[in-house]
Length: 459
Image (cartoon, rainbow, N blue to C red; front, side, top):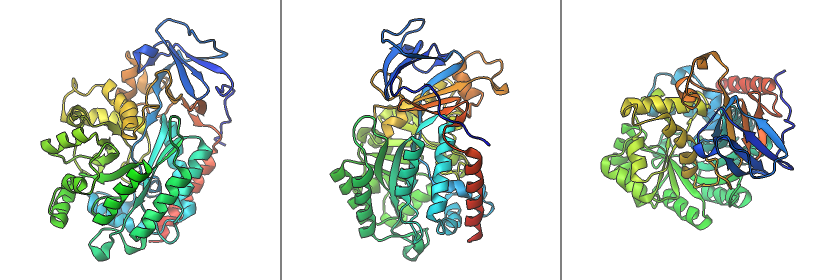
């Protein structure tokens, strides 16, 4: 049985020094960090000892220490349709139309398993803040976000959950079947209910909610505008897919008579409250407008490659003023939920678009931590500074792939780290020895696989 129990090292009542890591992403914390409660209280310089009295010490001399990785875009339910034969070797629109007929049959039990599997997989990769964009609501699946909140709380992970929506179905020229399309009054009422019930504010928030129409062409103009209005009223963030493919650009020009970003601007979304998934096909003028607005970009390198969508202009967007973060995207396009592996993909595709000297391993680590936190509108996560949340990802270099590596920090990306040895969220260990704590992984995998097989039978 694959099961691990909670570690004896707990910072709830003690002060813990993560001592002298093998390498660390922040040079100011080269001697480690001191954790008290759920926060970092001291970054220790190289070779020094803490000025804060400590009760416990964790010897990190064999670990590379990073802030907990922050995911900015995902579709948990898609873990049930990985490597699905009818959808293979397709571009975005035909890929979507093939899979919508499968996803329309999702049940709440299946979503609960999919969400748990995705969160656990992310945790094991060093991700401490998970994000999801759920927009498939059918008669059998009405409480998706409530289920995800319960799952995140049980796993004790930080979660940025978005209430997605689709209001334009095939009968009106959209892509999804009518069975997963909702009317605007229902969407807005449910969005309000979820924000009021679950959205936490301030530093250390564990659950945050955002409003997330699936894409500008899968909902009406009125719903885009009303979502922006509600987000302003409730002070929550906005999220959607945008500029993922050239087909999308052509579709928007035909449907609205304007490019996707112009339509986004016209509906009140071009603000620093918004972060966008993919953000590939922007011209120079649009990059500058996005930067001036402070709109975030969730870079999804693996999904972009699998679907042949294109390469995100990460460097230009970041230089213009956009927060740029990383995301695994859906597990039916990237086919995994591993943010450590996504860092390597971002490094490689970045060097293909630019050059090795322009896209360094330090830049990609920044995107996966500080940049991703910026997309979510947060400064309390994504770093190792005193006062920030004690969200940590710690990797060992004891696999064959790392043997001979001279630079431990670069080795994480260049040699392909895929599993963290230790993960801490809000001062509590959630992964130890590479295994999730308080989770029977063997049972979860068996139940999840059975759910995936049952879902495929419904088509």
